[in-house]
Length: 163
Image (cartoon, rainbow, N blue to C red; front, side):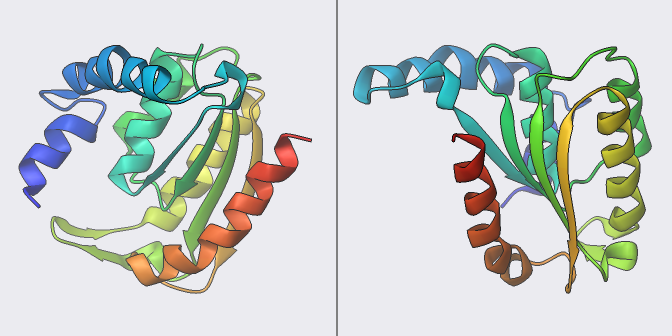
């Protein structure tokens, strides 16, 4: 995976982030709507690490499509937290957030980060703006195997929101 291109697409300040969001909104969603019977009230989006940032950005930019999200170990750097601070009302947003208890020193290809603190801050910002947040800290660090184990609980949370 090309990390520079990933950052350009997923990061809120990425060089191609707007185009990435437009691609999802103008091409992916219409394609899925044409191929499958879709319910606008039952669309969900999930993301891991910088993908969680992109997911949250999509929810902010296109609130008509996604209200429920699954956000694992978000790379919520302070500049992205400032974007959330600008939102006066996020009561339409519901999110399941998970972070590993060893992510205060998360090793990534671009450096070591305190994702645990970033996620706690993001949770607080979202809650302060009215979002419905389920926040879980579990064992592990910033790796796929940790997130993979959390998927069943996240999907159960999602299914219970539709009742």
